[in-house]
Image 1 (cartoon, rainbow, N blue to C red):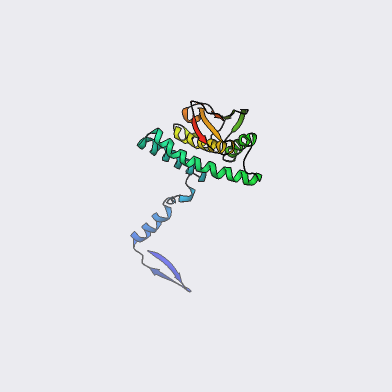
Image 2: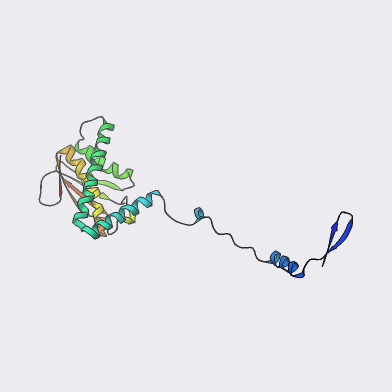
Amino acid sequence: MCTVAVGHRAQILRIPETTVNECCSMSSAAPVPLEPRIADLPIQRDHSQFLKELLRELSGVLEDNVGLDEAEGFISLVGGRIGQMMNREYCAALSCDSLTLQQVADVLVDLKSRIDGGFRIESIDETRIILVNSRCPFGRFVEGRESLCMMTSNVFGSIAATNLGYARVNIVEAFAKGDSRCRVVVDLEPGTSGREYYG
């Protein structure tokens, strides 16, 4: 039974004991934890990682379903198109119709740097450009995905051949193969090994 003041008089209201007990138990109960907001969940994925995962899984599906050689062929087509687009952009920015040997080598390094690669020129002469790489733009997602190396081969080969007439690309070492770096040899004269490109 509870006494409740109403105006200047006190009135006796009869409240069932069960109701009083329920109110007391509710006030003493521990607060119910709130569920975390979806946007606050510790999911580590951003735009860059998503695109790398997408390319890794796409290349994996191709390798598993049509084989490594065919997968490299499909990715080569994409790399060739990107190489042509990049070549046009560099020529337009340099106000020239074609690049010199040194410009080709510098462009190959620069375009990789712009997408977070770590290429540098190891050596260069009239017959060969050798580049080494300390950081792959695909990061850890390139491991075990050798077909993705065709992006590098075709971009390099396409740009070199378009400007210098011919290129033959050998990826001697690659992160995708488990090596500690990439080493790419771009020969400017015909030979017996490597992927050939014509201007």
